[in-house]
Image 1 (cartoon, rainbow, N blue to C red):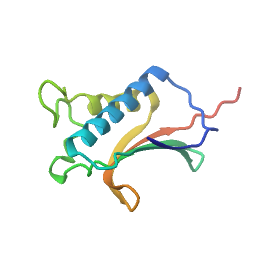
Image 2: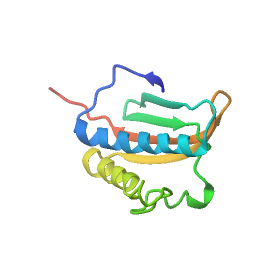
Image 3: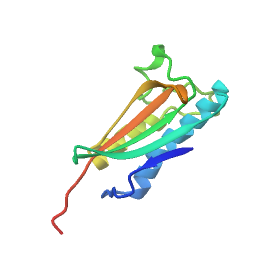
Length: 134
């Protein structure tokens, strides 16, 4: 794991719910790295602000990316690429719903290539910053 974290970022919300979202994405990255047998397995996690309006958390692996023929299905309930015993197909679906309902946030992805790590899936969590007058 490699980290690029802005340690000055704080958010208001449930640690448990956000942890569940992160666990779902990291678990999928781990499974993809195992399945695709990437040589130098890497997961990068970065945390930053966008225009002082959003918190942006990116989780990128180097497992080869998500095949084009399933890209439009990965957030559907009960869609899985795993064996019946290893996946239920509700992790990403649940993550999207948690972020929308409890954080007014978004989850999206794109395949990304970079020279250092190669091709991989990059999941982006975007949560509005809530300013407090307290």
